[in-house]
Image (cartoon, rainbow, N blue to C red):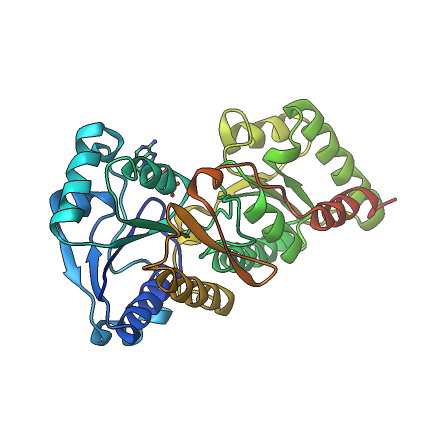
Length: 330
Ligand code: ADP
């Protein structure tokens, strides 16, 4: 029999619990022992763990957050911390460690492999979808839904006052969430890191769109989705720049951490369930230091070291958004 350990690390995402549930069930089916380490890599270093039984999975699939808690861990970025974690895993007799997290967590896992001889398998969990080797990450679909629903509500109030709203969406340094939130909420404009040229050129394009829209339809609301970390000096600076450029009543909204929470939508539960089962199915094989993912709905593995590679936006979606932004008012 095997002993498996699981932890959740880095930015939390809806569906991490659904993945833990799938891992519990997959381990039970094979008679594997399962340990859950708490607070990301901190629990590995401090030996804080809980046993995960079938009882603990009741209704877990629909809970946001992670019952194992997540955290960042500075000690894990140092040699001493990595060695301590590896020693603790060996002492606990852990044959395979499953890490649910983002690319930072996978970088940490890669370094752990220098000291730990057991298997390491990553499972992509982040709302940002910025991990190469999988079409989607656990939590991404829910975050799109949350952002879309929020923008729908912003538009109601924007329409009432014929205002211009700037809505900042998460995504770290990638535009997946912002692009999909913009498309699904019929936003008028989107600013993405992948296509950002300069503040001046973006402002010029936004003003052109607003003026064209006002010529054709009169004064109506205008929604700009802005990916986080794109605008130099942040959303307030963009608000001020637009207000200073002759159009009034520009309001900024930062959606923030609501995008990390909530009950996972079906696509995230399905992905989490498939990847949890697939990860456990690899335990005992000679596959290690990989991340499991799904490409064209088929399970795949890629080396952990390639998960930080750049990942392109969907080109058809990009073309669609560009045509919406540029051709609507002719
Ligand atoms: P995410 O996994 O969501 O990308 P972070 O980038 O914050 O989140 O990484 C999560 C944790 O992974 C960090 O707090 C740290 O413990 C560990 N980690 C990240 N990079 C490294 C590294 N180069 N070496 C060791 N550990 C790392």
